[in-house]
Amino acid sequence: MIERARVAVVGVGNNTSALVQGIALHRHTGSLVGIRRPVIDGLGVGDIDFVAAFATSDEKIGRDLTEAIFLAPNNFPKLDCELPRANVPVTRGLVDATGVDRVAAALAGAEVLLYSAPSGRPQTAKAYAEAAHRAGVAFINTTADPIARDPELLGRFEAAGLPLLGDDLASQFGTSVLHDALLRLLAERGLTLVSSYQVNLGGTEDFRNLVENPNSKHQSKLNALSGADKVQLAPLGYLSQLKSQKVAHLNLEAQGWGETAVSLDVKLKVHDPSGAAGVNIDLIRMAASALRNGQGGRVADAMPMLKSPPGTAI
Image (cartoon, rainbow, N blue to C red; front, side):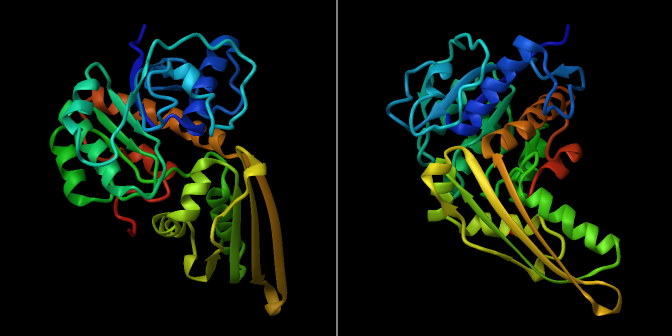
């Protein structure tokens, strides 16, 4: 039997809640609903053990990971499955570069560090990447902050034989994935794009943070879209009543044969943390496998699952 991947997480918010609960649901029921890759390099969906967790919320620090994921302001719903204690107490995380050695020491025994804190804190993200590098651990950056796009950092991970995956998740079925698919479909069918826009509203703390720190996310979203020069992105909107759901509105204006008008409007409503977890479950297994095989730096199979992989704009 293959050894389970040992994972540490930064950020005990909704995305971590969806990931932890989803793994428990799969173990309990064997359900493959919403799972694209049941097995990656011998690692199944349930072959993940959480060994460390970091957060900055005083209410979550010291709590078992399986308790902390249900504390406010988290609002991802409780799934209908048994959730045994992880016996992983949440540890105080970093707010700057101070404490990198402490975190590196706490990563002993981990293979992968999943950085799932809010976007807009590039120095904190880089500090955790440095801790992973010192600990000999693969690093996954799920945020829009430029970590894998930092050539110097990417080179150091590659030289050390440590995988570095990032930046920014392309959610399992999110606005960017759907928008890009529609833009590509227009081009494939010979239509000419005139203009397009997207509007995103959400109720998670990550949305609240992105409303206050939108710059890196805006560029990352553009990186994920074909024909981005004709696409407008409205500022993200935070509505607490949406809780863990995201509502997106897409519009595409195009011209077909004879310069006749084509107009398309789409509304998408999803649980945003589920979209993240559905991608993270694959990235974790890819990172663990690459680490075990001594493959450092970027992981080619992970590139389509990211909005801003190495080489895209910052």
